[in-house]
Image 1: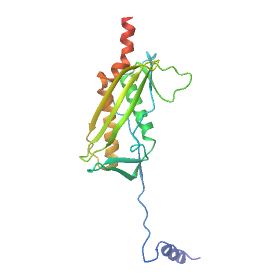
Image 2: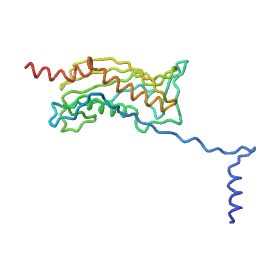
Image 3: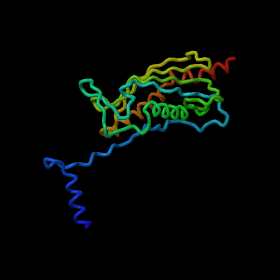
Image 4: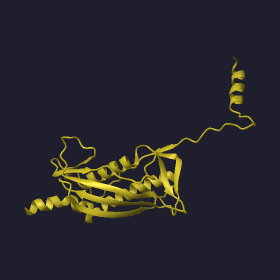
Length: 208
């Protein structure tokens, strides 16, 4: 078959009955959350004082989906079919929180669940996300409930956080950047909450 005949066949196949032409669909973009540089972070200690474990993160069902979600003026949840997470969102939040904590607690080793059977974990951070989406005004709001659990599962500290970022980028890219910034802000400002519980063990050792 000559090249000209093949081109005619391809063109004809792209035309639907009624003269409609098939259009190439828009490719989906893939995003992941990023840890942010924490001001004043130090180099990791050679011999950690203890091990901090970040448990699996709980997120609402409307966030736990492949698409990046946002809120409309009516309160409706809007999904972007062309903006998708490169990993399960709860896993992405867990990863970023662990990396941000590792930067803030250089004297500790920070690990993420599931933990190896041989891994001893001194304290566990439990995170339950209640809101994580771009709002109508363009800001990104992240709200969460945090708890620090001791080695026997006892609750050392409970903390609620609400942090809002105002990314300059539009669309899904701005939503993802804003979520990363809000998560980092929640960790940096948690000295009176989460980090207090993680450092309590040091104080108890000094006083004993």
